[in-house]
Length: 365
Ligand code: 0PR
Image 1 (cartoon, rainbow, N blue to C red):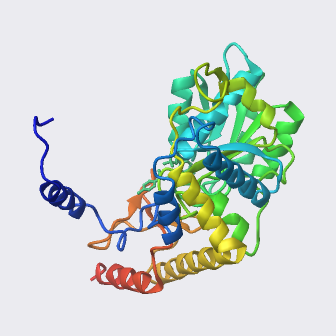
Image 2 (cartoon, rainbow, N blue to C red):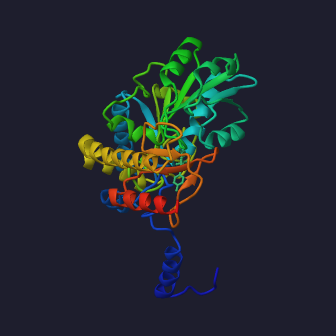
Image 3 (cartoon, protein in one colour):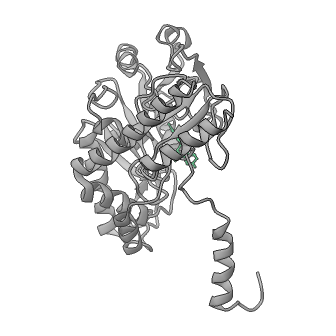
């Protein structure tokens, strides 16, 4: 740190030069984040100094967090769902596994996840000393139903299914997992970090949420398709009494106990997440999701015409193609199996898809 501060002008010119090195979202087809909705930015700024870690000081902000949980609970078919805002899918997944572990309190606990699960489960298991058991994928990159049972034993504390996988945008057999979870009395966590704000707004809605009686908890991220500011995730649970399992005493706070992972927690991005849902309503979200799905289909159709079929038919606005080259100037990603992966977020327009397809065609020459 320098002894004497610098001028505001000098500071901001330095900051701008760093910011200029950031990639603009325009040609970014690899990200699950997007440009926040203008009402999100406005709400975020309004709540900029709020701290949900001390809700007694910020009762208004805490009431917005409760409303966000209620809205997402209703959307995911459980009006009285418990929950709280997290920093994103990683934290929600860690906390879900922590709850599952605490509830069962077994000696050598294991967790059964699909092979396609996001890498946050690896972090969670490492932190929580849980054995991670991966169920192989079937040919459609979904959790292979036939191989689930053989991974489960008496020490399994949690089953995980993904609704909208990170790499292929597919859905695990969550109805089936729900049946096993009920039969064997195992906690079932659904990672809908991405799909949770897509699937409720598409025409043929699959069952993946609390509608299925075996689902115990769900991760859903407003900072992905919810167009909120970062960080905004949410962990929802069917029965809020499970939060007792992660509670610690907080003697000097305005509340006596805390069940979250983070202490100080941003209120700005939570207000932003609520603002977007409230402002757009179901119709507004349907319109945005339908545009993203349409663009995703346009991309799939166009790539197929060029000889690059998708590796799996996605149910959300993610697609992975059998295509070894990458069009120049575009930011895409590669799945673990080497497929070219794209995400049609709200910042991707029809014109951008046309341009991408043109560049994909010219890379063939
Ligand atoms: N679960 C699923 C299904 C996810 O896709 C992700 C993130 C997570 C959990 C973890 O969420 P957080 O990153 O919010 O903790 N999936 C994206 C990915 O890893 C995240 C991402 C977003 C990556 C924007 C890059 C990027 O530019 O690909």
